[in-house]
Amino acid sequence: MARPREFDRDHVLGKAVEVFASHGYEGASTEVLLARMGISRQSMYDTFGDKRRLYLEALERYSGGSTAEIIAAMNAESSAAKGLEAALLQFVMRPSVRPEDGCLGVGAVTEFGRTDRHVTAITDEASATLMAAFARVVRKGQKAGELAPDLDARASARFLATALSGLKVSARAGASAAELRDVVRITLRSLRA
Image (cartoon, rainbow, N blue to C red; front, side, top):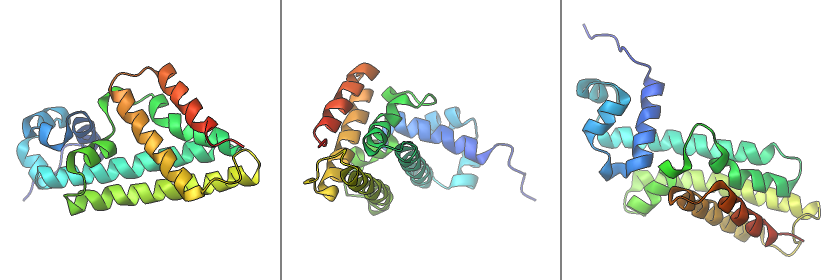
């Protein structure tokens, strides 16, 4: 008879997300993962399979959760411009994560590019969801007269997603919250009516 699991799977997966966000896939040794997750090698294999499957599950969890948090921050504001500002600053202002630890989604794209179809599928899905939300809010801002009427909503969404990725990389490189807010202010100024 198999021994019952003696740990919270969701909590342990969250610890794996932290390790992969800080070290990437290649840089995260199994030993570091096991120590941070607080489980044995056999428990990892029994619960998650191998390191690759653990990484894909961690990336999927992170991407879905991060995208949902960004969209929720954006939708919490009645003003489109304020919503976009909240979305761009959401990563920086998240109290539970140190921005300098990195974004697992951006890390996956920079580490794998488009060479791994499973990683690409996860990052593409998150990107498409975020781009659609950005485009919707840009159109909302245009209708309200907050954003320039001649903006292409899809191109603006790509611009915002690129700015967000740049903010995450800058945060990891040590940019202060004040410096990141300045970048957001300039980014949003380029969209205004």
